[in-house]
Amino acid sequence: MSAERFDTIIVGARCAGASLAVHLARAGQSVLLLDAARLPSDQPMSTHFISPLGVSWLDELGVGAEVRSMSPPSKVLRLDLLGTALDVPFARDRAGHCLRRLHLDRLLQEAAVGAGASLRDRTKVVGVIRENGRVVGVEGGEGERAHTTYRANLVVGADGRHSTVAQLVGAKEYLGYDNPRFGYWAYWRAKPAWKTDPELAPFDAYIGFFPDHVIRFVFQTDSDLLCIGAMPLMADLPSWKGRHEEKYLEALRAAPVTAKLTDGHRFEGKLLGLLAARYGFHEAVGPGFALVGDAGLHKDPTPGFGITDALRDARNLARAIVAGGELAMQRYWRQRDVDSIDLFHFARDLADPGYVSPLNRLVYERARKSPAVLARLSAQADREISPYEVVPRGTVMRWVLGAALRGRLSVVPSLFATGRRNARVERARQKRRALVP
Image 1 (cartoon, rainbow, N blue to C red):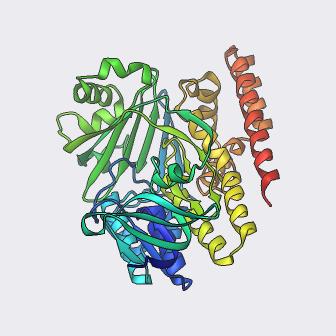
Image 2: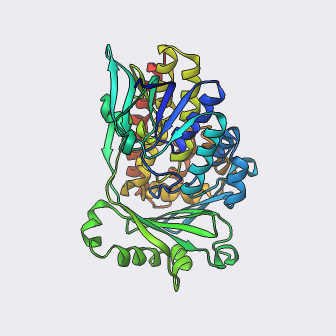
């Protein structure tokens, strides 16, 4: 029996793959969307947060209104460094949303089918078909379809951080590194204090950095649930083994915000954990294939931009595919790197224990009193400026000089270390810009 033929085959039907399928099907392409899981199903290895910019791209896909109706708006993010709170409002009174993946992925899969894509779940891809060095299809399936072949002009891997497609096509990794942290999180029923306690009411999402080097986070999701997590350093992992639930609860109750939300309370469902991960870029295009989402770029989740950037890259890849030609595909790859390199490094900085530094504490103290800096933080959340450009260099120098004159000399070496790191990021950014065709 001859293989079925499509314009594009997308392996992985989650937020990157399903949204790409919507864009391509609307453009008139025949699209096959494959996923190894039985759908709909959850994707618990996700903090779920979608920035306001990402929500606007969900509007383009036709599911933004449902996401808003199913999950509460997050209009203010609190960044907490050693007890110094920095409340960052999103620009133009917009909001982020944190719908659990069971619901978000289902909405996007339904949108893809509604646009004309063919969706087949329980179809595990086990091989790619090549002709003259070019990928022209995939092999896979389950049960009676265990050895089915599908052919297409392009095969897209949207199958996550352990991408089978990336492995099968030999897409090379670059800038890769192993996660310096592990994490545990669970869902908690929101207490009345979440919106009535004066210490909690000003913000809707929370990321806290503490002297014990455990990052705590809180995101409000659907069904009146809060996703609350703790991310210690890998060096602490041995002390958590066999005691992960006990240590998780200890970590939450050792910090003021998470203690208020969990004391005398019990989380619902299972405690979820991520004990190892690798972050980095993969070659995004090659002969007959492309990668999108975590399959092509997996970065530390601390800033909460994974879903937003997956939606962005699916949008841009769809435009390149429709435009056609090698140049358009190369431009998608190289522009993805330009758009992502700063946040990739910044996410790594946030997870590093060195982020809790004298300089950053000074920046938090001064930024919370500066409407101009808060506005730039909002702009950064919309990806309008780099995280490294939020506080202008001259402003930082004035703050450091003032602090040093008042005896806080520890900010000076911290400034030099930060300057060296920022210079490396700037060189990396310029290098990637030079590669855009």
